[in-house]
Length: 296
Image (cartoon, rainbow, N blue to C red):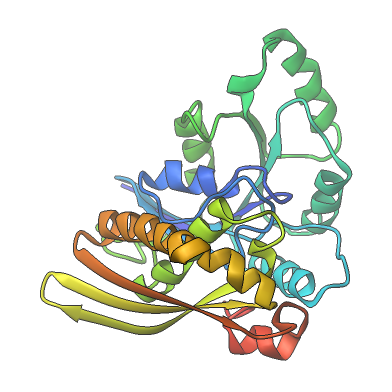
């Protein structure tokens, strides 16, 4: 039997559902999600092993118009760099919606010389199914896509068809990882991401964009994992918001993060969080590199 294996870049504008799609395809939460743009800041590989193929899905930061901020530049470069090393691209857009940011993503991917599959997400939310066909025809005229597949990343609608279309276009190759591998990310990296996810979900809108998480200590002690995490913010006001009255906000961030980590690791987790201020880090490329941004 012919076996195929290769990298598949999942690209699209911010907040279109890339991380949700990856999690559903893999069958486990490995990429953080939140209803806010720029939740995904690092590239993450999810490994899906099939009988005749191993698909290495790469979740990328949302490609967006450069705002001039260092964070935006670094994330755009990271996403663009990934495109240069994949075998297939899945370009994710939202059903019945084509934006200037979608057009900007298409401009970035149209010169990538690999098959590009257009996945049209959130079709489960479309009340008028008949209106979807003209929309698919219109977006299909914008580029010579290898296939156009309507899907629901959240409900799993049509994902077997998407997976088959992807696998058929991968190069012939043996598996790159054993069949139990779900992601190439380290548990230490996942711990930082799961803490940042809860900050993004719980904090006021302006806070998550000035927050990053650094793991200071990660120790496995039998069936217990002890984790010390440092939350960096840019202003004292953000620190106060994250700690909350009597420390309640920080406790809730820790509680939710711990539950998700225990589900992922299959171990008990003891998680301690601290908040510190480091002014201007998100608009300083050197500081971003020191905090691990841009490393692929």
